Each structure stands twice: as C-alpha cells, then as structure tokens.
Length: 204
Image (cartoon, rainbow, N blue to C red; front, side, top):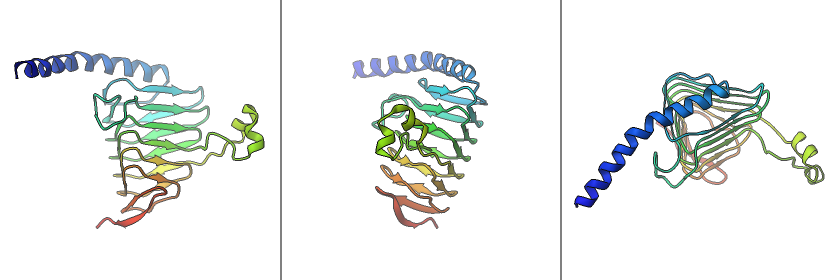
C-alpha cells in the first residue's frame, strides 16, 4: 500500500515537471516548421515535418497525446504530422488526437470538435504507384503516386486504429468504428465500421 502511494505520487510529480517542458519543445518544433497554431495542450512531443512550401494550420484548443503515457490504448508512438511541398493540412478548433499519424501530400481538412482515436492514420496518398513497372524505380514510383484530398467534417469521431484513405470525405457527426479501413466517402450522421468500412446505422 505504501509503495503504491509512493509510486503514484512520484508519477504525479514527474508529470507536473515534464508537461511544461513537453509543451515548450512542441512549440519549438511548430515554430521551426512554420506551423500556424493557437492554444494547445500536449502529453509528450509529436513528430512534425513540414516541407518547404507546405502548410500546417492548427485551430484553437488542440490537444494531443504522444506515446502511451498520455492515452494507454495500445499505440505507443508519437503523433505524426507530415506535410509535403505544396500540400496543405488544416485542423479545426477543439480537436483531440492520440498517437495518430496524418500524412498530407496534397490536402487534408479536419473540421471542428473532431476526436481522432489512438493510432489512427489519415493518408491522402497511396505513397507508391499502382503500376509495378514504375515501382521498380524510386523516382518514377514517387512521381506517379496517386493523391486525392481528404475532408473530415465537424463533430466526427474516428475510433482507435482506423485508417482513412485518400479521396475520402466524412460528413458531420459521423462515427468510424475502431479498426476500420475507410476507402470511400461517408455521409453525415452515420456510423460505419469494418474492413472495408460499411454502413452500420444512422445516428438519430
């Protein structure tokens, strides 16, 4: 009992000491990558890579958990923000995410009040050409990868470990069940789940 109290007290002290430092380091990474940001909170430090000519905009009251200590849901990596040259990633107000990876080669727009579960991946590209001949050469492979914008509406909830693929639009208020692979657009006010994600029911 005493050992448990000591352990929990020590964890709390470490948390209180580390949180301001993590915030400061994250702010430094944002500034160095020319990220437009307002008020945010973070547990841990994300991986941020914005190419020259890329654009990353974070709305107000953005919150994120990086690593398992912030949200012990089974994903252990930091949040990843990658924005390619000429690409644009915009995240609205009051958005929360845990250990998610958002990879933007063209355009990704995420609305307000969105919850992005642990380990979610959002991609607007296939990363590689679908042509096996072109994939043999890294230059032609990269140059011929498909890209299509992703749009996620307001009040959307994306369950843990889901993958949102290129060209997808998710309508306002919709819910994506945990572990889903979303390859086609989803209307507003619906629940979808599965691999590939399929319609489950309307949200009343």
